[in-house]
Image 1 (cartoon, rainbow, N blue to C red):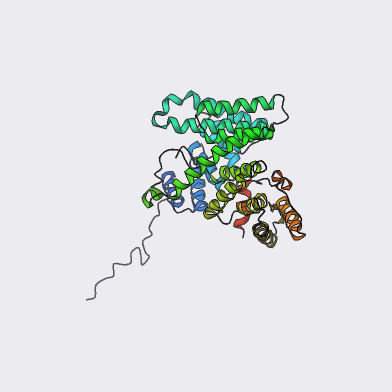
Image 2 (cartoon, rainbow, N blue to C red; image 1 turned 45 degrees about the vertical axis):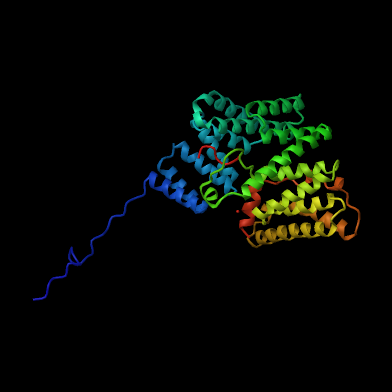
Length: 377
């Protein structure tokens, strides 16, 4: 007699397998795995799912906000950080500094101030993280100094407030690279160019030393992120360094050589960064003798990259979101002058017109055609 089949039950129907619904912890673990693989959108979706299950969890809000910043979604990050700082103002005080970077004017100043106050009050509890916290406090003071050089420059005693913020940054973290660079920027605005050049010479030496150490990392150090001593500044800071070196080249042509060297090195890290190509064009015109052909090549490359972004946005019906309109106009003007073989002098390159244009917004646009590492991680 043939044996009865065991593959069927319940009158021939297969037994259903009940799937487990992922928990908050499951989503957080999957988000962490996705971040390791640099799948940021996947990670963000897992954080959203975790937040839906635990809507009052400020740690998840902060993590999702950080990812949104990296994904070029500042408005979403701003909303999350406002909610988090409102619900738990003293939990993870670093979030105040991220929030300030997404704000402007008096609102940003208030957020920086709150973050500094909380971090300073809890400094003794940080144990082996004291130096990291001091660095972040110094960066926050530099953020305040930048506000007085930009959004709040017309405020009464803005210059004195800027100077005081830089002094506070140096007091919080002696020798802070951010504070030194902020001081150079202030001195240029005060037309104290000799002092600015002296400071930038020191900044350039330190930055180049850090870049050399970064390049000399072993594979193990690179994979594990093992670094001792002063941390490597991020791209935004280094681009600002190059801009200030170009500014100083009006007083000493050697600064143009240093700026070109730094920009070429940064290009090895990110050859899709349009601003790097643009600045290489600018610095070529600042060198002695002027490197006209290099300038034309670099500016044309920047233009081609901007046009590619614009065309892809047009194809997607998103022309209004093109972040490089002013920059494209400026590059076209420079190329026109070079085409006429006119003597474009360094002073004619108005770098102020090349605003960094929300770097994340620009990166998001390029995808339609990519304050620092989170000190809490």
